[in-house]
Image (cartoon, rainbow over all chains, first blue to last red; front, side, top):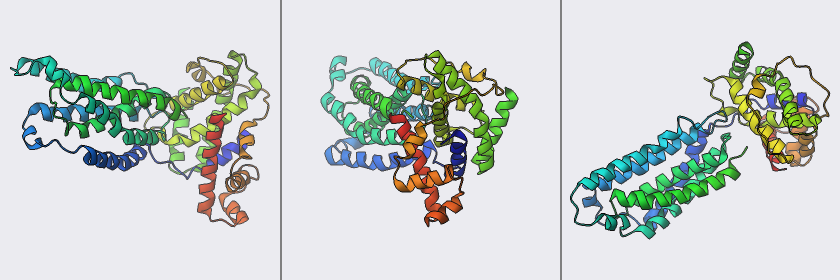
Length: 212
Length: 181
């Protein structure tokens, strides 16, 4: 097939238009999110004292952090799905959850506590946190990669890492409603470790799956 | 370069609005630039430049299948060159070299650069024969026999919709086969 023939063939296919990356990602996540939610309620469910916990600002703040992680990763990930996009200027968005968490940690440090900081950091649920977040994020990670395969990222590993952050952020949002460790010290330690693990998996998978 | 870039952007907007002829003109207009760049990339990597046409076709397939990632409010050229650069690096890597391709290579290429002799492309044509029968027949009918979608539908006793689906799937499979080897 010579190049003129190929061009004519591509032009004949002009009317078949692939759906946008955003909507492909939305569809994939809409399928995966219920899977993670059901898995969460079957295995963990809300913590028993959730009604009281809701009055604790540090409990509520966990959701602000996890959701801002998911949102910033989503925005940067979609941006990088365009081939000419550069992460420069955008990557700073990812610091949002980090900054929020550091501020919360500073506030908590200034308050009087019955338990020493190391006890709050170690918490009660570190193992569960490190298991639940990666497992709950798996369906979302797969869906996110499928969605972003519709894109044309020229930085597949970085984009995969962002899918990892997005799925970990969503999974952590679910898990946070079960977890009875509300100290920002716990969150910055264990939630971050779990997120880092998912992000590494995402980067590895992305470097293979998101090439075009 | 500005005039050329504006023209490309305008053609791509028309193509997105469903104008197949504008799309065909756009692809024909970018080919000389892509060809010159592919040739230069191959030369720099110490590879025979007569394989440039395979790279050009690989880029065209990617441009086609990823065109929804172009933002209609942005210029077309930077998007095109990002796709082309990605494909060129990929092609040179598959041929065993790690290379750095500068985006400026594209920008400085003059549209009027004379076309040198090249070996006809063979990769796409080779993969074409490995497609499922239905996809292969439809793609060949349109590419090689220059038949329209309508004529192809009549020839194979298919609906026009089915021809469109087979054509699109065929092109998608061709692109993924190009990526694998």
